[in-house]
Length: 292
Ligand code: CP
Ligand code: NVA
Image 1 (cartoon, helix red, strand yellow):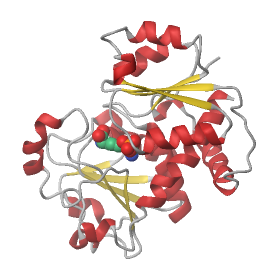
Image 2: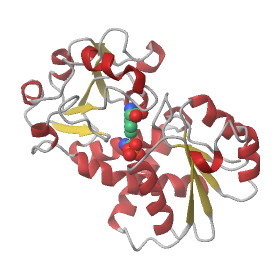
Image 3: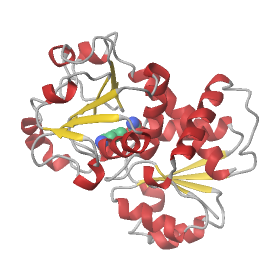
Image 4: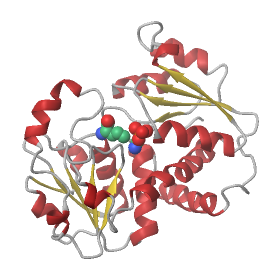
């Protein structure tokens, strides 16, 4: 039976560990892994812009011997030119897998329901599971997964939702600090501690993580959010409250001077470029697990 990756809950703990182990091997043997996707064509349906997700998936498919087709909003015009149901049924006759970045999470669910091939969520308004898997890989690489505390500062958005799900599933302690009204939902937060003050969340943290204050699709709220999130900046004063050897993570793109300062994102504690690179290795592992 085909397997989709729409949220972190689609994976068991052992499947997550298998993806991490395979990604490590793929990183070590970047060019020498063979061609497990030879003869397979994968479609990337993207309603929103992307640098890392699109490029790392396309490069990943190429390095594994397959072929990727980018289908931007102009090509498919999902839901306007054709329904997600019809798109999913037709593409299932050509492709071996779909990676979809959509505004609404319901759209990827609808694609997956009607596709006979695996559908991978490349970010929706609800989750970004490929980012969370890759972030877990980076955390393991830099800090190990034992006795660590992750602190997320900022918006209770898709990136935080997936990070909460993966940390809760893997038994990793996670705190978040979000303004009132911008917290993640209680069922997603699970056992995580959700604070309002950033200072409370970063105390004793080994990883300090942030993301943009205004996500794609929320552009109309930009000015309001600048005010609401003003105190939620990861800067050198906030970093002084975390553990001395804490690392700084950001899924990127970053709005420098807003959620993070230049001195922190470019400073010695920042691992954002390794974090971005790891998207490639982890997504190759996801592709092999789901499509081979
Ligand atoms: N982190 C991330 O998903 O980046 P893109 O939006 O550029 O793909
Ligand atoms: N929360 C951001 C993440 C971008 C990778 C957004 O959805 O725009």
